[in-house]
Image 1 (cartoon, one colour):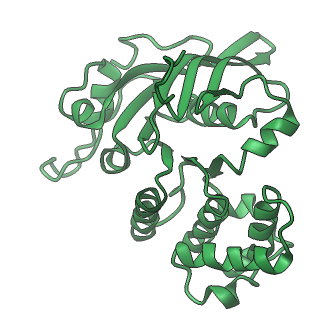
Image 2 (cartoon, rainbow, N blue to C red):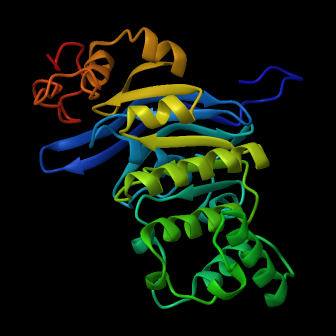
Length: 294
């Protein structure tokens, strides 16, 4: 708990567990996870597919599938979120906490213009806002993420935008309510390298302008080294290492973290050489062990 008079962390996660029923019994896809994020701070969550990264973000947002069960605590600026009703969570979600998903094409409704969708997100959290005011906010949000000719493009449909531009629309939608916390779940998936760099620069710019905290979920170690101050490494639903980005990349302590860093291609590698993490990743049912990557 936060000491009296001390500003609480922006985000506190304590003993978070997410469990799914299976024919072979209950499986913890996230287990005993805990971390904090200070106001304006940035945290990268890295790990291979199936490590529990996205389930962690969905648990924070209160968007877990109905069959999943969750235990533990999630607090935003000292306010407990894990016990809120769906109606109460909707007031927080999209307002105080916003999320950028990895696939904007499936997140955007193809039957509505992007402007209408940004307007809807804004009006859902702002009372007594006219359509004209909401439209102005939508145009300003699109200009903020550097979409050219936003006043015209606000009336375009998702299929009329490229993948990178659709992701910009998603970021604009997330920013329109000025959230305190932005969660970006693999925001550069399926984008080419140049567009990836543009989106990452945009997220950095947004943080600097708004002071929002950032949780960046990715499997790309190079991204977290540039984008975040702290890094949390996950495997089989558990945190195997957490450290400042500087320390993690200069002095990784866990064998799995070292194996991940060794697998990053280098310019001095011999032609045809490809380092990999040997062995198979454990299933969440098995848990992560210190030597299983060897």
